[in-house]
Length: 136
Image (cartoon, rainbow, N blue to C red; front, side, top):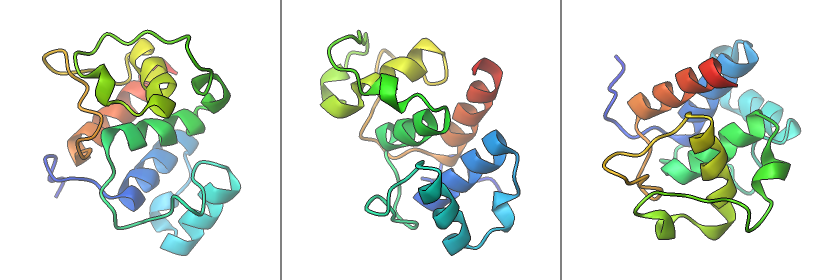
């Protein structure tokens, strides 16, 4: 079952993105194989590794930007404009990630809010992947 309103774990999110974006059979990988591969590809660091943790929306932005090979651009400071009402809740080092994904219409807010600190749901993760595949 999908359970779209359930928070997604880091491992589930990374497995979903990697399978969808890279087209490999990451769903067949063991946890160790998945993380070894994604650490080697610089999608996640060893320090960030926390498979069973629920990830926030802004953490999810980082992983997908890395998969798109846009992290260097996302890290440029003071060039991004964000219109969300709750933009001050976005961690300063993650503003570029949010702005790029918003610009590509991969993520969107609800009622003017992006809710960066909220846990990402399974349904939201699928929408992010779908929009990424359509737009990048």
